[in-house]
Length: 626
Image 1 (cartoon, rainbow, N blue to C red):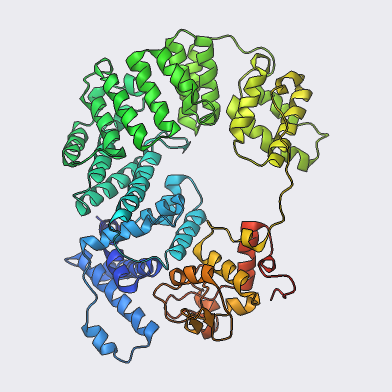
Image 2 (image 1 turned 60 degrees about the vertical axis):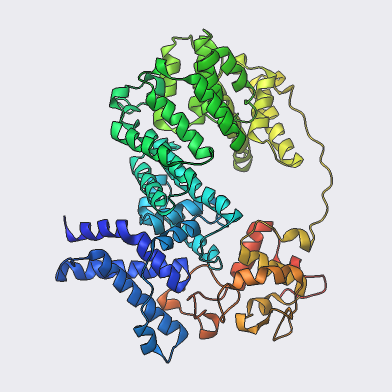
């Protein structure tokens, strides 16, 4: 193996332990990961010339610890630096890695940020690797990771306990399983599977099982992923098209992974939870010698138990599949039809419905459902598979224009102004996804269009709803089918109250923004003066600053979380550290985090993005905005 290959292999195996150990020292995820990256760069520079050390992991850990000590010396300007050097940074422990996993999956982060940060700091993947796996731009992943690190700046680096542990563990498990699912059944792209993501999720799950051996749900998730991964070789044919579970060649299932899944299930002692129940369902499939031997009644019962933990339409759809095999296709279809409004935009609903209709001998309807499912999926392999299934039925072509062709012709009219065409396109794109491009307009009923519009916009304001309804009516009138809009009705628009400062402080906004907005509202101070506040200026018990800015209970409740362990420097910090060539004045740079003071322009932009208003709206009338 080349030196670079050795460095990459060691980094992937040891990065979580190194970052976790540093985090205990520097208490900042972004800084810990940055220092660890410095150690990686040092290895890439020195090992080719000096040779790979006997213990590469220890070398990386030692260099990272030295960099952390150097950073603390500079940040704190310690006179007792020799004493600090004699007091070594603590050695990484298994609990450190477990803490890192809990921090990277913290509930304050949105799910995409949890996934990106976990793959970055725990799995050791680069932003480019993560972006390639999820088919997004590298800049998107870099921004998600940066935003996540900023949001975690004030989050305590500790293991949850008591009642908090279950919720936090559920977040970690959810992130790992989301990564696995994206690899097991890709939501978009040309391939059905992305094996790299499955393997990373398995590695994370196995690591978590070692760190938390007494958690049944952890072992349940590992068992579920092991057994599902065992089918990977049998899930696609030579051309890459999907093969349904009941049609797979079970001789191609990986028996080693199945045995590992069974062993993980034996370790999942305790009361059943969502992942243990899903693993039990996977065990039922793995134990059946053939599709005909599958115990569908037991699987249906397990799904009923799972529904008590996860009462979601997806779980109910899976239960309907099991009932369709256990009690007959009509029983399954009855359950599926109850979900049509909840899952109208989900491609697996018409796919399952098509399967059940075909088994009932209703082939024409089955074909329509598969065509609709093909229009809803964003995965090319799955789309081709569904269209092939519909074509294999040998049904006659639909009479008259299809939904897709009619919409394309409507939008292509030269008389439409660009802005009008764009507005129509936004509306009709959602309608065509719900109905399917190949559905014949002549074969649809008014209720079909009403259901499509309701499914596309289930919870919008009356004003938005009426705009979409008007667009659909215009299209149907142009297409010669105005009667299809008979079930669509306008909603009554009630006058909305004028936005007040209290309604502009959004509870779901990031912590920094909420503190800033709440402080501006409560203090009535100029925006520039609030942004100029430093941590050392604040008298938290007295609820005021040295320059006379005072606040009330709302700000007082939020400030400690924003400050965290910081003792000095700007109160409101920017998202990123400044580039070396663009260093701000010392007064505008936090000595503990290296980030600069939040600018007025950035604060104004964030508020307008969130509310559509200016920051000046937060202050009582009669006060200047700056």
